[in-house]
Length: 233
Image (cartoon, rainbow, N blue to C red; front, side, top):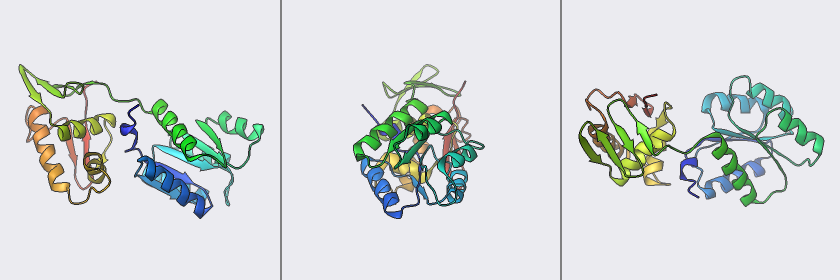
């Protein structure tokens, strides 16, 4: 099963044990996730969740300044991203408390790295649907299965990089995707130095999808941040 569309998601790890945080981060990076935030207290977790806008939070039940259940209620006041509880406790009451508050899963320490990854995959897949093969934009339709753009009576063919660029933006429709994140999606773990190449791909994609490439309505530049794709509803 293709999990590539999950790897651009941002994960927030919340635990007061530095060694465990590093271990979790290493496991996730080895699995393909690159955008990882970390916090050791409830206060730090709230700040990171507001600033970094993670797509999933892995939350320890026992924290130095508040318990994970109270922290989850606080997080839920401004975000509805999926939350997985991670704890050394294996008590039914704790599990029911977490799930009753709306947690998406509950993992007991110690755990196997592969179990953690599979649980994360499952939660992300439930929460973020994989892309539709057909995407309707302002002046065209994109068929990702065929790597073709239909604009009026013309058909434009997407290169591999153009396909990946559009697909990455479409999976996060309406959200700003940073230049670094797009470079990672197109060129892998070492994306530095590819910004000019990315800009060139964006220009070519606009020539294929936009009615007026110099005045784009679908592939929008967010100055200083990155790009986002606007679809027709």
